[in-house]
Image (cartoon, rainbow, N blue to C red; front, side):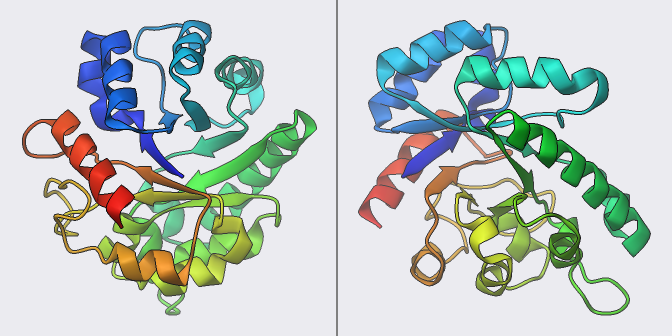
Length: 242
């Protein structure tokens, strides 16, 4: 199933949440992934998603730990998502094994909280988790070794390639833990340069999808030249044809 990470159109959502969501549904998207609700309440956002038949695949969120725990769980519950995705942590957490272990411990604790509440927990990568450690290993795969098998990975395929790793090899190494959520974005695979609509960059998604299918292919662009909504529309049409 094709979905859209709503962060892609965050400016449009901030200006007109309902109108933008209706436009996304009109493009044909059957599902969305949230990263906040841009001034709307989670309950009202969910009501609009339900009206338009948009499934909420997952939600980018802080970890459900400490003071955040109940707020995160309440928000996820209101949105109707079943997977909490931890979307970013500073690059220095992947520069040494002891720091990776500290992150793994946090993820394992949060995963237990999620599972106790009928939810799953996933980690979303950027490029720096794919830049090799001094021993030649990939930080993301070292993290996989240290977390519980119930912790999922939302692999951002674009950032894997930008980091210098082989996308298919990374997906296969993560195995079933990466089979639910896959981020699909395109562009030049150069840090700091804008992304494109899916199909207009250097990513070979035909090959990636053939080698490693996922339940949800989630379109995302951190930044594009031009209108993000136009890129979102073009991306859906490309993936539908693919």
